[in-house]
Length: 81
Image (cartoon, rainbow, N blue to C red; front, side, top):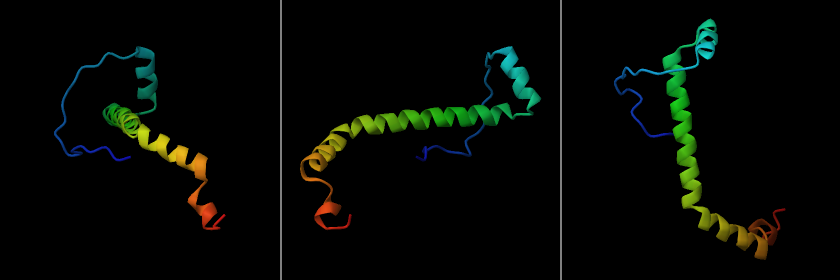
């Protein structure tokens, strides 16, 4: 799922408080913390968006599943399986 946002938006300086041991370990790995945080935020927002989409479409999923349970897949009727 692609998250819709401006990838070229200006950077914003923020202050974070993190576990000092985790920070030390990340620095040992020569990790770009800004890129890491960007990726973590994006992944979190993608998961939230997907969760909302699933909740919004739950009725359609349930309806489709009932149809399959009652009638079987269309491919069976057509002899494709």
